[in-house]
Image 1 (spheres, one colour):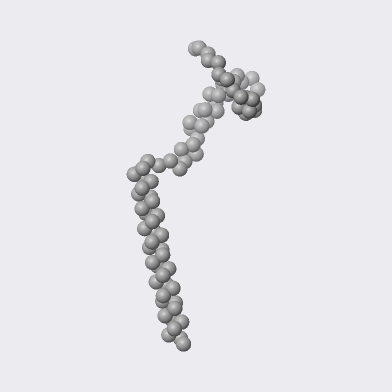
Image 2 (cartoon, rainbow, N blue to C red):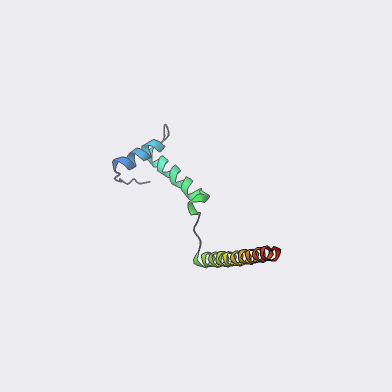
Length: 86
């Protein structure tokens, strides 16, 4: 197994060092952190393919329109009921 030398600015080095456990090499730290990211369900959260995203957007738009129509109908009935009482 070969090795590579990489450059890190001070902030990146400090962040990596803060994640490093006792007795753990920097290589082990990077492997552990990147493995955790690869298996973390939240990493891909919010990413949808275009077809799914478009379908959801259409469903949301229809739901909003339907809700708006329902609210308008209820408001109209309430106004009519108030007018009938007078």
